Image 1 (cartoon, helix red, strand yellow):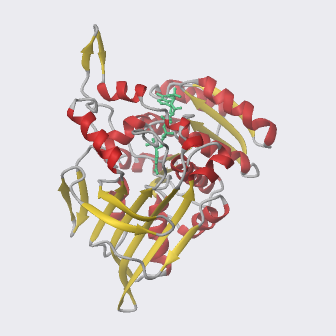
Image 2 (image 1 turned 90 degrees about the horizontal axis):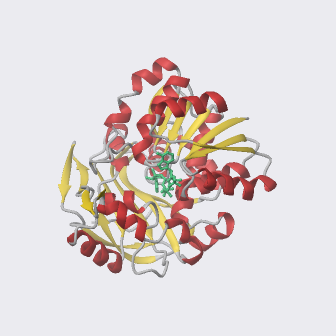
Image 3 (image 1 turned 30 degrees about the vertical axis):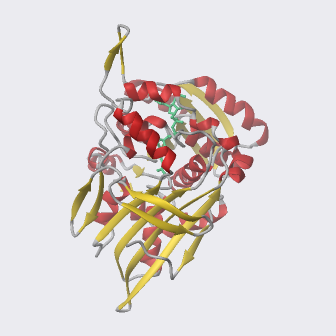
Length: 400
Ligand code: NDP
């Protein structure tokens, strides 16, 4: 079918690359390009003997638009899948625009010096992408990503209108460390130490970090504490789901994680303000990242399951209706299959599927789009096929 360039070679990219190589009829060629080329080469060496996908590797600094353009012109991919960090979204979008190549990512842009993510910057590219005749697909991970596809699927098949969405992200995995993050620590800590917010009656309601707590009995896992966070898919779902009154996002955290995070915050270790240390400027959060366990090393030690899904309340034929669509994923099974824990797996699989949707032309229209703006059915089928089967419950417990 065609060639994709994956930028970044960390936890999420590693899973997406494994999955592209399993799907070699679609991904006939793959270029893995990242800052540290040795990681790309190591993955190529591991996977090439077992796949028909032809793999090449390259070194690139994704902050450098000219370097990206040169690489894209040389490699000639049809789609670029951005699995570097949110800071690189705009430079990679610029390079795709200059070379007229489709763009897919999993996380929205965030300036490095302000911990505030929103779609504004990327939505600003809409007209330019339309004119260039190329597609940008934003947020093709699990949340955002699959949660938006679940929403579009619920609306298409089960509801006349959806009024309430609660997105629940539960990670019941235990890695045995007192404190570690399951994906990039810098991005993760910026997200969870920010103020919370939810969408209600047409506007944002802001909360203090971790102010709103609920307990939920997750299928296949059991009762867990979960906390309301701001999350990026709320912003696009609020625009794209007609009749919506409220959208909230909850994530589970254990007491040990929260106690450590509070302590690190209190001593200033989560700050993104640079400080001088022994004559050199350092960012405390980046230093903290360097001393924490590398998320990619958690795979062998993490046991337990994840459960991520959405509870919908709305109307069908004039009657109130509820629906819960969710996926559960087992950390050890993911590790056996691709050598990564379930948090990277649940993001890397939808990233591969998003790239496949665009590469095959199943989801392609000039402009910049969020996941819920396309037909959910082929994506939902692909989730079942490629390792993230979903379940539906029509009578779930609700969150008050
Ligand atoms: P990692 O830190 O493990 O990997 C990031 C990769 O990007 C590394 O290989 C890194 O290179 C590379 N990189 C960083 N800066 C540059 C640069 N300037 N030029 C080239 N390459 C660069 O992160 P994760 O794999 O955990 O996360 C990847 C993305 O997935 C993030 O954007 C994250 O927010 C997103 N995500 C989305 C989720 C969802 O459900 N939607 C859930 C989890 C994550 P090096 O090896 O040199 O460090």
